[in-house]
Length: 258
View 1 (cartoon, rainbow, N blue to C red):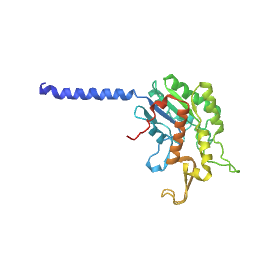
View 2: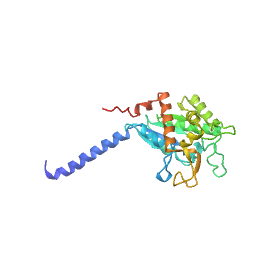
View 3: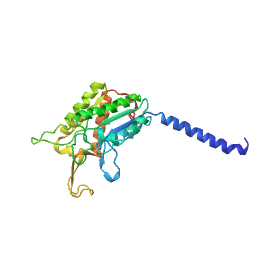
View 4: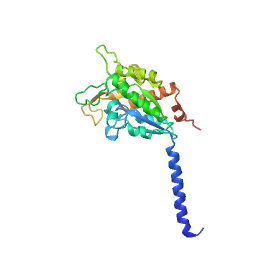
């Protein structure tokens, strides 16, 4: 081959390889995580706080991609109002999955954040929109009940968090024939089993001077430590396996030492 043709040939070969790689990558199915602060990503400045969506991504092999779109402080309503959902819909394709978990902020009828609140009835209406628009793109939606908080009543009994919204998710599952992972019940049972003292390790609860970031201590009974996030992610994976969803095909294979 003459020298003058070599460089264009190399460039053309490189571009062809790159385009094939890009096309192959674009055909990979994706898992879209949609939800609130109990699921979302956190940077190092928030360590050791994690949303369960962070360790969840480690359960899957590289034949599927995961995009965590969850955002702190969002509800079914505000996620739509802020146009966070439409770009996801526009990207969805057949074979993709949407895991959606809202409820914490929908139920928080705060005067400081009136845009977040959605009554259980409106919550079901908004969730119906997520379901219908996901299905219209040929993707699979999986509903997840809001994860439990670590709160006890005056008798020392663990309170069942967000009951109305959990009930709404279960009802939606039946009405739309959609798979539901009851993370609320699973996490409630885990906290109860661990007991009032040891269950603190699941959440952002620290004694004074236990961590440099919290010299006066910290008592957040909603958000998770890295340990708690992993345990919640394990419960979601457990739910996927119990329902025998197609997602199990992308879970990392067992490791066997040679």
